[in-house]
Image (cartoon, rainbow, N blue to C red; front, side, top):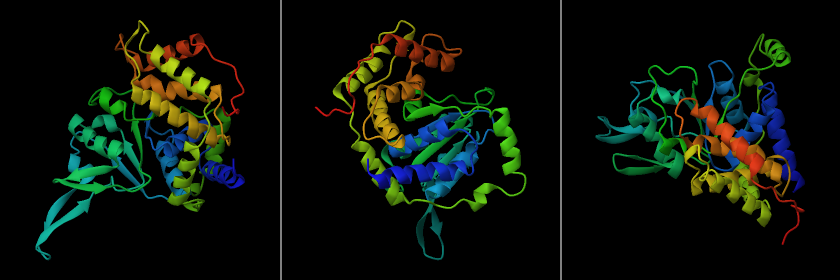
Length: 318
């Protein structure tokens, strides 16, 4: 790996750590999703730092940031924008919605109606939106961090499988430990460190890192192991619908990006094992509806212990 690439990755992570205490693994996974041109679903209780994490990521990368608070009365046009008649100009003018940004925080996405939720589908998959028949491209990179509360169920609309499958990963930040929470009290007792955060790279640098991730070497035996793992989700008795080929491709892209984040130009088995749960678990449809969120993770862990792992020199090009 080039020294410049390695140094840039380390600088980005250090800059985010000036704002976010702990959660280094979550930051690695967020950067992995960004370089893989994917999106992330954060399932966490309020107050755990989801908004601060998204803002610090955007500011560190010199990217624009928007936030949408999803509610039952939110309309699709509140997300994408609309055409309105400008009397001075005598013509219709496009008023762009908050989706026209680099980093979009979709807060409590499961509180909006399915119609409004689906307004994000085209944006997430195609990097464009259609307004009154006109197709409008979005900024690059375009990265959605959606959140939902795992505790509350009243007044929520669970995301359908089609939309869950659009998220590269589903993550949970969790509560900080005692030492981290004490450090949070010290760091945020006066001004927010986010105000002093500086951009350390640009959108052009992110594009270059994405290209570098696409060049990461994955040994054929590791590709075979990855596919065996995904196919095992389709043959498990407790899984009604396993991960699709989109899941295989998502895991493959994430593995290469994660290896780059770890400052390697080749993937290792631990990369696949680390990413299998966040990338695949939310794509499974289990026979048990209640507790499916936890069951999916348990089943992936079972498969990781049963699918044979090959041994090889993973750096050796064939």
